[in-house]
Length: 201
Image (cartoon, rainbow, N blue to C red):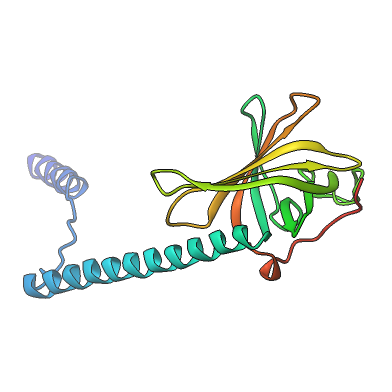
């Protein structure tokens, strides 16, 4: 009987020991020289990519300023900001401000549908631009302003283009109400734009 109890006790201890066993996965150490070389290469690649991106941004900025000077541009917007600060992400294909010589077009289509006055989920207005000015501040920011008058619009339109990029914002300030709206996006030459214009007001 004593031997049987000892056998039971030994089995229980064995099971307990097995239950407490932990397994730790081990990996061979990487060669420190190889890791250092990989990290160095990664840093160099990131630095090179940053330089290329800065050069591209600079070229895009110069082209955007030239488009403003030529009065032939489109600001394709992917974000709308309303007067109380609320914002919405939108399609840059149907939300834009454009100028060709003295013909200005403002299209806002936040609903991305076939509804709305213009058939693309919003409103499209056209007008004649006047009092056009372009100035550059001390920080290199280009500020373009114009008055736009037409059947469905009477507003001051101001475009702000920071130095070193073609990312810009345009604020439309109606003359007869406070329904100000700002569109953020990229400013490109008119010939490069692929926006879709709805039916004008």
